[in-house]
Length: 125
Image (cartoon, rainbow, N blue to C red; front, side):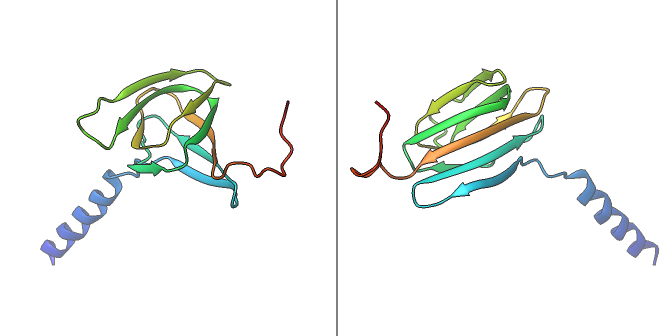
């Protein structure tokens, strides 16, 4: 019985010690033309390796901070970016992991354009 109690206690402690280290992802809009997501990375969290397949991606930082962009290809070097509230970046399609290495929560709104506009759409001049 004592052995069972020790095993149960060990299991409970192990599950609480391994907190979820991934940020939050919320899809705000997703249709045939565009996907817009809100990403929240508390300090010390990461996205996990994922792929952006659409070449037109704009990232708006609601709350800035310090991020490490880690390419899937380990032969490529990581890139550290420091961004401020309200900053916008254009980023190419890639497969990577995003890690918040700063001390503050980072909040991002990311827009990926899936298709080129058709000829019938209104364009800004």
